Length: 353
Image (cartoon, rainbow, N blue to C red; front, side):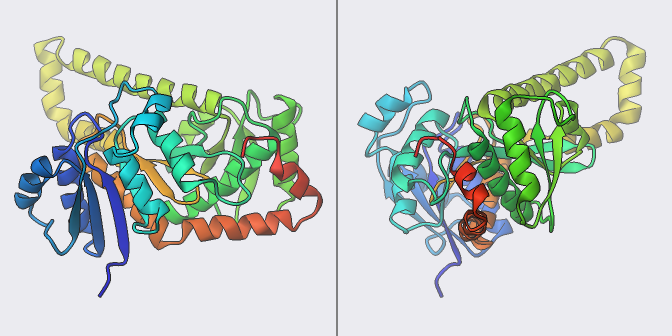
């Protein structure tokens, strides 16, 4: 019986590759036994790692050899020209050739975006890809996009991001009717630039299984005011980096405070269970796996410095998107939007194809 979901892995991308990739695949296949991996990378390095795995075996993984890889410092344009036989490009090509349902890489983000866009092409009806990922909130989790793929966006791009984001939230966060908000400098309708106001007007008219709340502000991201936050890549990337920096600062201050005196150390010992609960809830590995939405294929970017647990979670995101038909749902709901007449023209926007 053929496996339900085939995932291509760039085994050579990431700070701790390829060991981290193989261990991550081992964890993922324990959680989801119906997965099959096509692991692209240096066979001499991969075979011993797979041989020492607990759950990976010849029946659920295949090694595709290449000794070339994309370096983290490589410019996307250089990687595109010289990396045709790299582990990243070959893994993407497996998806493009319908030999895998999705690709996961912890390698160079810019190179992965450029190669994926070229190899997988854009989903019909989408002008630009968007990077989407999760944020922990006071109410659970939320999805945010774009996180850096598009510095400038018109109203049509933002509407497209909202459509893809709410489908992503429904599938991965298991929400029946996600709430959606546009990130702005205020919640009032007159606030923000013209593109935001135009996108808001369109989103209030469309009939999809989501609830458009309107404008949200920066503090609404972690408050969990909405399930999906939509913004351009400039603001989204700043928000992401600010959140990551704040998390590191909080951790640093906490360690410094608990190590400042003998009484603080005793206090830490007494509150260790509660602190560990907070640490687990904010663990960035649980939210690992940024998705390039808008491509005609599933491509997931794992954080380059993640460990095997985080990489397994990125694999899980790719598997869920495939199993629950993300691409088909995007195409179906875009057809609904384009059939709504006047909104169709604005939806196309002026983005690059």
